[in-house]
Amino acid sequence: MPYPHSTAPVLLLDAGSQLNTRHCLERIAASHPIVLVDSSAPTWTTSHTARFLSADLRAPDLAAAKVKEFASERPVAGVMTYMDQHVELAARLAQDLGLPGMAPESALRCRDRAETWRLLAEHRVPTTRSYPADTEQDAVDYANLLRFPVVVKPRGLDASAGLWRAYSDAEVRAAYRAATSSSVLGLSAFAVTGCLVEEFVEGEEVSAETIVLGPERTSIVAITRKLLGPAPTVLEVGHVVRAHDPLVRDPAVMSVVRRAVETLGISCGLLHIRLRRPIGARASST
Image 1: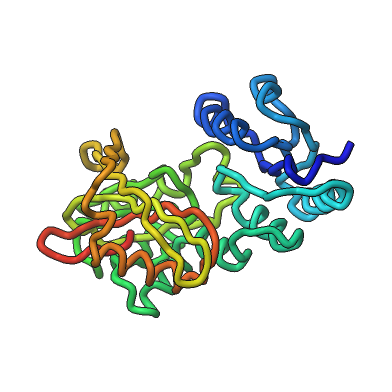
Image 2: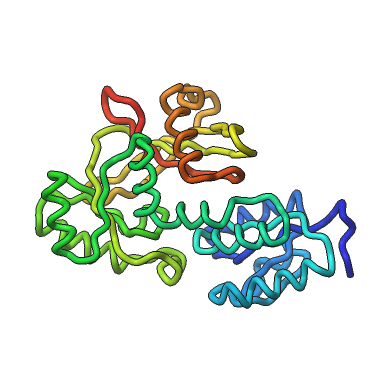
């Protein structure tokens, strides 16, 4: 049965896990009818979703065909996901359906850390120096070029999975093995393979929670200050968000965020932009 336009549903790609994403699903369902698009509908999602659309998200072309068929029969308000592995597919579907969203090519740039860093460096956006490494020896060579300590991270994961700080050749080799074997919430099955070796900058790590509503319409809505665990991991153990954090309006932070958004070609979306503020220096994107 078609939905009235006033209650057109949002298509949500992937339910995620009950432990990590149930609160997100509940918040979205409070404002919009949700059609869950996934290979199965876990029982914990049924009270929050209006309908389930079976599709194998590991086969993007087939999933896209099913979603388009569904959308041809009833209005759809939007396409979204809170799972990194489906950001590109969500962008593609939004574009195909004429709905607001990030351009697919911008989503691809954001999903590949090596491409992100290449573009930021090319456009002189302040950032740490970073090199893609395909072998342990490459990682060691780049670490010595950058000088220790360095950070070794997966090229395509998220949530700080597989991030390690290294102070020697042996630690770089161990960090490379950890980075290339790490996974989080099944993301490794979709991620670009390989890892990055990056210079370590001493300073405070924060995230600029950013909304982009169109060209030159970029705003920072909150700052998340990170509490990091002990070395060698670079894993957050806590987050602090203050209602009136002065960094929300800090000119240096805003400049880096806007330049990064423009460089990556993002004209619509919600972004989590990680920054490290070097001691006594301006902000740089990480």
